[in-house]
Length: 442
Image (tube, rainbow, N blue to C red; front, side):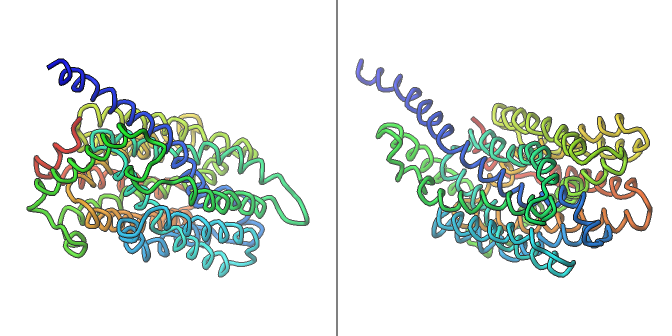
């Protein structure tokens, strides 16, 4: 009896040690990868402060080029997600980072709109599969009860990229080496780390807990056992759900989440790609100051993601966390659109908008991935993310198109606010089976 009691007392300690070790081993590196990915995706928003004038781009030209990234992204996202689930995340991530790093560097040598469009399209195609591969990877390593926090930490990299990208990009814009303008050096120097990390990932990433030599035997056995138990429970609870790839892609809930993410990314990426230009236009401040101001709301967004992910995990509630933050983001954007003549007040409203538009993602993904397992889940993640990211094409392009036709940003930002509200409504419409949601409770 004494031996049994001591064993049962040791189990929570083993679990706590395993969870802590996995968190500290993987999350800093995964966040770094996503910071680099997102920075290479959105650094065009800072380059645009000089690039558009140098290359005589109109607002519509810039908006189309910024958004066409996501057309290439859309085409290869689902195949990339399925590849990650069936043949391994590490292999896919290494290929993705090497190819997108090379294309990001090539952006520093564009001469006209056609080159801009093609390289942005190819950059999106190269990066396709990275995000769902990372979600698959987190599902392989973290229990459902810890997944909201893990996704929150991982996705905080988006806001960190905007926080870091502001001052770094502002400084790079001041360079004038070898006859190349600062915006060209911005692309070149921010593309090189992706190549280096692509090589490093082959040696650093461990595919699954069972392969982790850096975990002690008792911690590895506990984590593998917990994850296998969860997978078995999900398969049993989800028998009424589609389990093959093609069935998953037709599942009504998958399509609903795809539509929700589409409107959500119209709002968040429509804002992120235009925020530096908006602040520059409204304030007339130097580029470095503009870049620092843009980093402020995304600093708050980091905190919002972490708090929202922690709260969602603690309560096991996903749906209202997601919809509530989206409603807050919509209100902030709408208010910011209506007070653009007053810079400080507009910035406060945009900060509120960014808090909502960045804070919702951890609970959204924990909710959206709670009802399918295995390759079907990977395919669902890929479809949600690929269709969603078409919104990342629509948002920046719509902002540029409306900017040219209305001579201001009010109409465009109101469209973004409406898109955020639509996402909230669609998330509230997704009422998953009780057993699906119970898997994510601690």
